[in-house]
Figure 1 (cartoon, rainbow, N blue to C red):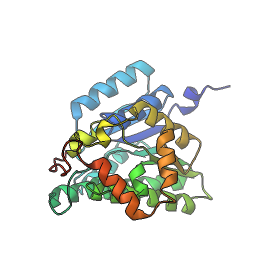
Figure 2 (spheres, rainbow, N blue to C red):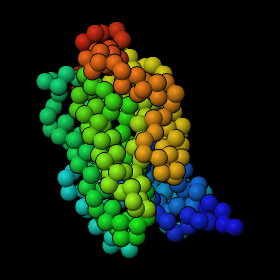
Figure 3 (tube, rainbow, N blue to C red):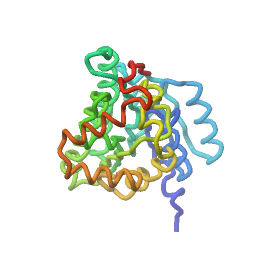
Figure 4 (cartoon, rainbow, N blue to C red):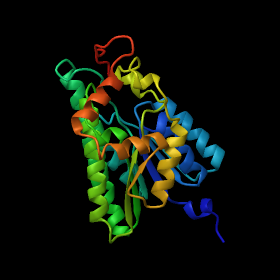
Length: 278
């Protein structure tokens, strides 16, 4: 009887935002179970070091590193074309890359927010569209979209981020229904506040939420990995986050928005911080 690692030999997973945080932890989990890797991010050197390490550590057949700025509209098609030219088939797609910006919407930079919309919405939609065709042809495949607990409620001071994650959750669940009679599954992972570089990059490092309890990326990735492998439609990572997500079904949106704003404000200054993205 084959081990899981032996069964996964020859299968390939593509992970965006793979150089740190959830993406790096996903790469470790897939590598441990024998999957070939296509790692995508802007940080070329960090990706290479991770790729070399995982290939050597787990004796993987193939690890491909693609440097791409996924905030560029052309990037998803470029990534797809590179994968296609290499002759590889993507068995699992992990749309992990994402970003946010902290501050009042009328004060934040529009160009930065357009880049966030591209990264959080347009890029995963396009990558899903492109790689789904091959999955449909083979009647086999898995897609993991990293949403957020912010998907369930309005997010003042992170208005664009929350809205993009709400889109990603809705998109994932719609695809689940469309693909229910195929061998393809779509899973949405909804983490809560986590110990990654997200808050610092978003300019929210001094917010209450960033200085409160944070989930560890390895724990979040493991929850998402297990749900993906079992074909689950949605998983909220962490007990407290599960309770918060469940409570969002009962509280009025304005009450949820007020709570979220309180959490996103700085602890020692009630005025929101200036935006500082990426």
